[in-house]
Length: 112
Length: 114
Image 1: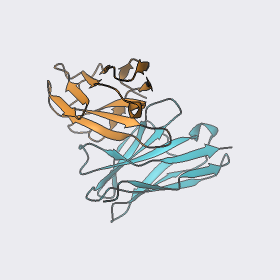
Image 2: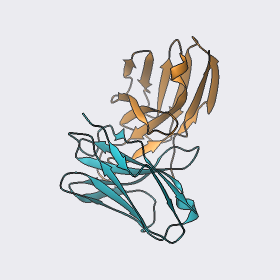
Image 3: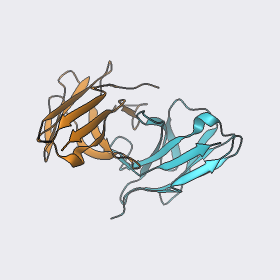
Image 4: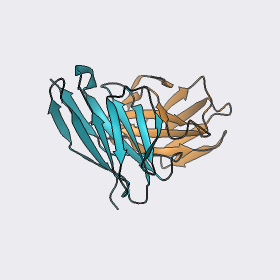
């Protein structure tokens, strides 16, 4: 039974570029949430997708956008990358929106 | 962004000792979760708590949902070297407009000396 899988594992980009991160939820889960984790900090909620719609959003600018597909997988897109966007991006899945979330191992994004 | 207050920030203990850490908030949560994160990996769910006063165990780990619903506690008994890592508490609110957003503490870094 596969858990939450994320790709790529690592990514290096330069300022101003755009990036797309991908996530496949745990089997049986229909909800995907995205978090940003800076070094030495707890994860910060970006947004949550359920039934292919953004259901809730954290305090992140519109440069951060997402999508959920009919098979429940999800993408996180970040435009106009800034140095401060360097972080570990975590995807979490759950069954419905208010159940415990299970995390993938994340994508380490470095901005040069 | 909003975070829970987690303490202690770090602990360095001897193998075999018991560990206690806690998490407090100014807001009420309906679900408390405890995660462990190892270097280069994502957080792994250890324990989920759903009711005020609830006490739940998972092996050597025991967690409690505070009566006020504003705090939670995690205890690890007889620590072993593989307990090393960062422990995060997280709160989840139910109800309209606030479902699904996990609020995390800053983490407690645990180091165990063999």
